[in-house]
Length: 156
Image (cartoon, rainbow, N blue to C red; front, top):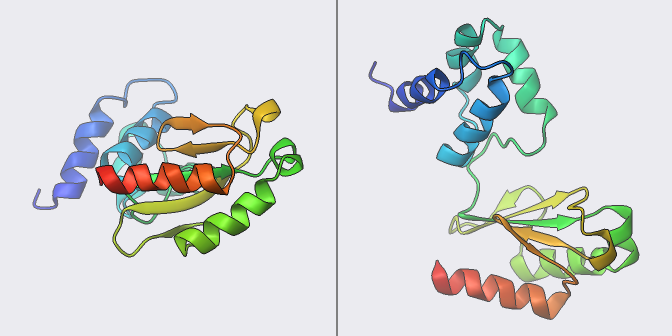
């Protein structure tokens, strides 16, 4: 097979094809490997799971954590659940969009940052909460977010 993406998808799928519900952990692994779900994923892996392409596409489109476009090296997610809203996440959202020059769902031109919303990080009493990659931050305001982002830029 000449397509390296399809080859890698098949390699990853082989690890999950015999697992009950293996499509979900596969998709998480694909997202981690590529930073997004490649267009050819569903059609490539569906037969291994005895599923239709539409069934796999349905899973991809249902769960918001699966992205169809390449994401930034660092993903910034702002919690928009009610508790975080009560603690100021709307102000944080407005600041973030202006400071980063990004809307939700966008990635910076340099490919370093993606901005997304998330609905509940489980840190309700300490909002607004933010997840950056796999790290959680609480009581995030403008200054704290700016400091977090500057730390990411330093580490590129």
